[in-house]
Length: 117
Ligand code: HEM
Image 1: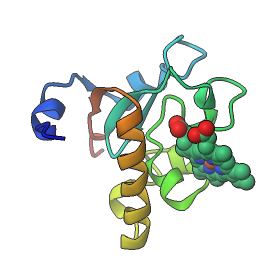
Image 2: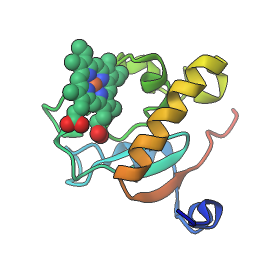
Image 3: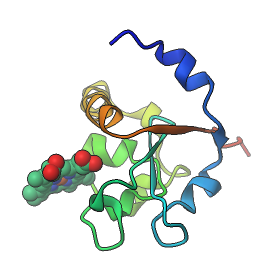
C-alpha cells in the first residue's frame, strides 16, 4: 500500500467526544468507533450494534478497552482513561487492533482532544 496516511488523516473532519457519542446505533443509524483518536464507520458490522457483543464501544474511543481486553464502560470514558497512558505492552496490542480494524472500516473523522479544565 502506497497511501499517504498523514494526508488522509489531515483531511478528515474533527469531531468531539460528545458528537462521537451520538453514533451509537441507537441515537443514530450509523455506528462510529474511534481508535487512537481516529474515528471509523463500523456500521457495516453487527458487532457494534445494539445487542451485539461489542456494542459498548459504539460511539466511543475503544482504544483502552481493546488494549486491555475489557468491555467495562469505565475504560471508554475519556475523563478516566487515555490510550496515551497505556503501558508499552498494551500499546502494542492496541496497534495490532488498529492495523486490523483500520483495514476493515472507513476512516470518517478525527477526535478532538478533551479540553483541559
Ligand atoms: C470469550 C471471549 C471472546 C470471544 C469468544 C471472542 C470472539 C471473537 C470472534 C470469533 C471474533 C471474530 C469475529 C469475526 O471476525 O467474524 C472477535 C472479534 C473481535 N473481538 Fe472478540 N471475543 C472475545 C472477547 C473479546 C473482548 C473481551 C473484546 C474487547 C474488550 C473483544 C473485542 C473484539 C473485537 C473489537 C473484534 C473485532 C470486531 C470487528 O471486526 O469489528 N473480544 N471476537
